[in-house]
Image (cartoon, rainbow, N blue to C red):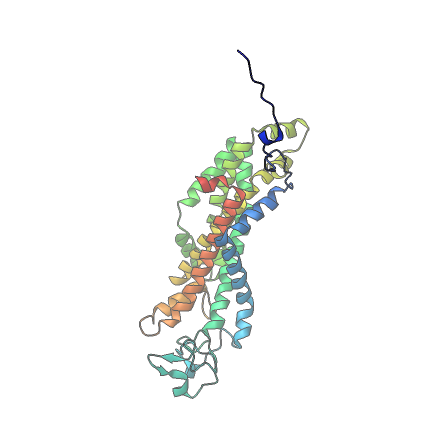
Length: 336
């Protein structure tokens, strides 16, 4: 049998399309903090929370001066006025109308501006609300300081040394955690005047416990790692190992824990003020404003509306930001 030879020509071949499947792509190296910031910025809820916190902080410091009123000034002829901005009489909001009629026109004070209205003593609610927000921000800052200075330090030391030191710190935290904050504040008021001092001491007694337990758990997880053994071999001091070697590895979790405790601390202050154990008059806090407005809720609902909205937005913003920080520092937590 004769075999036919096949002659290959250019017609038997087709040019393949160009592609880059075999090309290596070099990505720009990013540090851990840049990577966390990029993940945080992709979280719209966290960015919204951060923006709202910045806006609330700005209004807390600028709001009272913007209103033109002092939070303590009483004007009995302007009691229980609804929200009003001068020149907005025909606007759908802030027109000074309540139950169908313009209160400002009837009292002959059309050129007066009270953005949030006035309370039962004629004090401007806009100035008092943002002055009260300063108290909540002070409590938030206090919670961060207590968590980072007291709770973090005790937790790291307790977990690293163990033994009697760990036993003593953990037993103290367990005893204090069983005592409600309300009871501690009540006992402090017996020997002190009601105010920021008693709330500050109460938070210092109980606020550090959660952070202490988280820091201790992280220390127990990391203290047997190779880099800690290497630091000991090189002759590093104990506190250098704790705060220079181990602390940076748990800093992300600590930041998230701090942000998580802020709404709880703000709510605690507002609750204490609501039941009469907070800031004494004439100083205002969001809790005391809600408590005062609650007494006239059926007659003048706007007295409680704005403090409640500001408090809710403040707590919601910190919660959203805390969730964003948690996902940014530990992306695996989002998958769990």
